[in-house]
Length: 270
Ligand SMILES: C[S@@+](CC[C@H](N)C(=O)[O-])C[C@H]1O[C@@H](n2cnc3c(N)ncnc32)[C@H](O)[C@@H]1O
Image 1 (tube, rainbow, N blue to C red):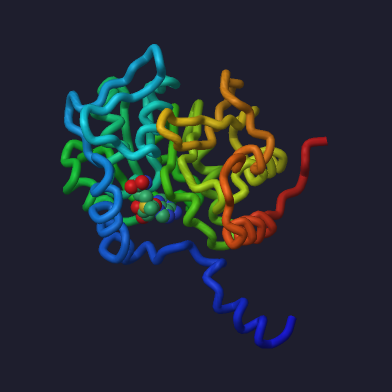
Image 2 (cartoon, protein in one colour):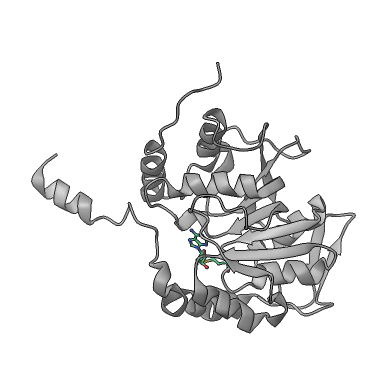
């Protein structure tokens, strides 16, 4: 490689996560939450403002709409009916707190690698006290992480690009979940389907079988839903299927391919 290309290559942030998580709350997150999400959507719903319609499998909001991604997460919980739900990278806690409010019978928990994010979550949702903990999902698996039937992330794994960290995160999420993993992520940022298939083929997932489905929310959001048992949902066999109808950014796809290419697995099942 030519010298100037090598210098430019090393300067790229592609081997780093998208943010410096140590100052993320003040630098980016709180501003985005207040200036972006909360100007168009109701981020925090009070009792009675949301209702789950079990016949249609949809969530209805009184007045102001909720964000399509939050809508999808709530609809997934309502339709799958897990006894327990854990959010990885729960940030300010709005999603997991809304899950708890709409489905009071579900045991909820949330983890995040940011102390300031967890502090913000407790300020916004004092009811989450004793349900949150520090968790870096790219660390070796901890037996103290709360297990749950459904483990989900929203806008977390898409930002993780350091070395093979996102593979570790996916593997850990599957191990933490007894039934389902929901990835409410930007699906251009990683080759989620191919990476998960590779993890399964290489024996990196604790489940004995893996079914990869597409899950659509009623207001346009799309997610990947992993389950141990086949579900009556569209099956994803490629990232192409997952990105259908979208116009992915070339730059993101290139980075996703570079991230995928760093994985090494072996000892495949004969
Ligand atoms: C874009 S924010 C999303 C927060 C929240 N899920 C939401 O939608 O409001 C990304 C969050 O992921 C957390 N995060 C990043 N890397 C993580 C990791 N390795 N383990 C756990 N949390 C992580 C960050 O601290 C931050 O709270």
